[in-house]
Length: 66
Image (cartoon, rainbow, N blue to C red; front, side):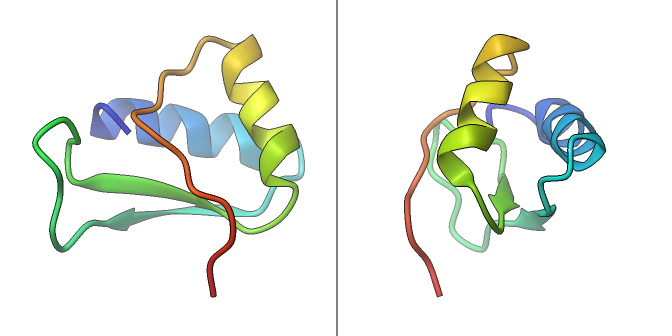
């Protein structure tokens, strides 16, 4: 996420719509990142559409995980 504020906004928005998610601190943050990531645990593509429709910016996204 570009800022901690956007990470919190994204988490509240997605959680209120039933997308399980959590903010996590990045151990090795990239220069364009604030050092926090928003992990969405299911329906990532749909969650991304919600973030886009509410104009919540994100730096990048990854599919998959573990």
